[in-house]
Length: 229
Image (cartoon, rainbow, N blue to C red; front, top):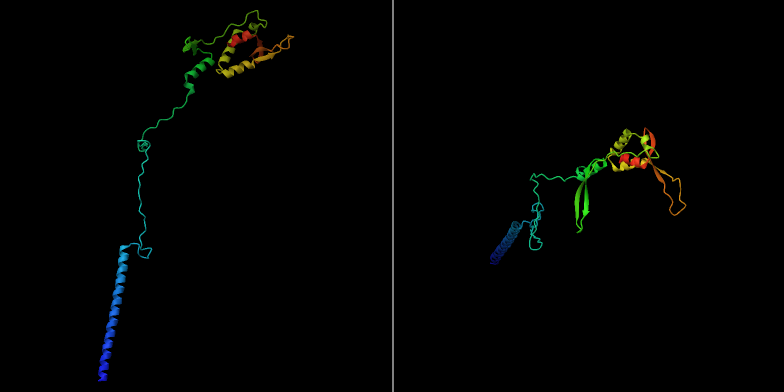
């Protein structure tokens, strides 16, 4: 009796142990399955949930676009921008051409001894000013000094030589060159007599010359001025 009962009790205990172990194993399996399924669901829903840097997509932060309007006063000023596709001709800046001015033409005629128009400004009684055009005649050779000249200039230079001097002077056609021509033909001469008054001493005089065939020929002031007018 004792052996039968002991064997039955041992069988029952072993069966209970086996059932409990099977339950625990099944519960552990189910918990692991649930954990795996939860992990898969997280990785499926979250694209950045995996630890693999290659598998993760690049993170691009969202760009927020803002439109800002700047107004000056009550209206918005719009700047016009030229379309480079339009092949419009751009005007070239006008250059100065002083040689074509009327003033330059008048100056050329005056320095060349030719006739020209000059502008004269007249002030009226009421204070206003009026402009008028005046025709200036061309330069001509004036008559020489008379026989009473002490230097006898007419005997030194004939009419052909005087015409040559006149043309040479006005063919310079430049005021600076003409002044240089005159100054080169002048020489200072000390006065022969001096005043006793020291407060007002006599100034030196000028002697006038023309260069004829490489030699300086002295003439009087009147003859010199009329030769070049």
